[in-house]
Image 1 (cartoon, one colour):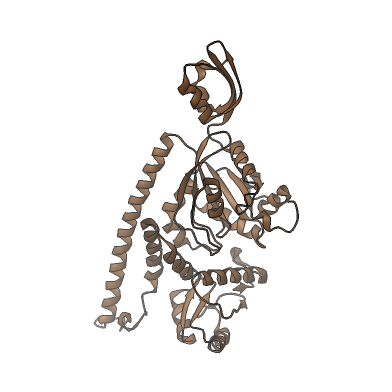
Image 2: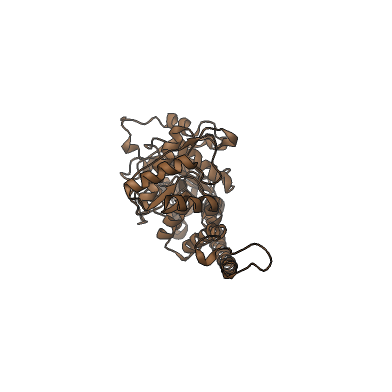
Length: 422
């Protein structure tokens, strides 16, 4: 939809509408649909009964009949009344962007937590749409003595859904408690956590696999990864960190999904550092970056330190990549994120991965790396081995029965070895 009015930031221009419609087509294809045609409506404001107005409904009906379409997808949230009116006028099934995303999520959720989160979002979406969905739920009247079996069935369905929503929320609270317990155990080690976030299909899972030598599903389809995965990674400084891959964000992400996936998104809000992965080859990379920053603000994660990862540089036409120019173009003056450092990589080919790991080492605000000179007894093999495992040895010499080492080690290890520092 291209609204001509500019009220409260709801305006979509022709280019924005075309971009959003292209994204909707990708989502539809990812759900298994074959896109037969597209139509953009430009009007001053949405029409209450049908969203697009009677004339456009007739045009859409004719287009659907000529293409033998069995489903019409709107790139805009529909009210229950609009959805019913459109299905009646178009004589086929009508869904909106939210329902399409929910369908994709339902197909791809693999863990119990993911399925619960999807079902919760689906039930919250379905609840206001029960009225009028079939004869068995139809209202027979509105006054005293006019209630019939349809109204009774409607109330029964509502009660059943409310009970199920309550049960799912209780189950998700248990999941959330379990995640909190795991996080507390991780903090007790302690290990910093790094969360990969980004627009859907930005290449987060490919980057995750590259960093952690993992085998998380990678797919060109949107929302190929829903369930969070956590793996350990060793940085060049020998510090160990935990990296988590999370669900991709998208423009106009339904609030029901943000709420339902709160347990998953807590992996982001609890992170020590966020790797914001951007498909730098995408034509609308700046807009996608803005959408991700908006969601991060909504989940109270905007203040967490970020490292901007310019992914898919192998697809850029120019031989070199001006990282600073891309960083400024993507972030501009967007709050604290504008201060983020940027690194160019190709998760697919491995280009720039060493530089990314070094950058993580530099900016990670946890257990900073310090330089020290240690003098350890030669017989203290455990501590010497620990220094090699957890730090980087720059120089080694042997004096009598002692081993002297110039090292770069985490501050926590330096404190543990304070009595051996020269």
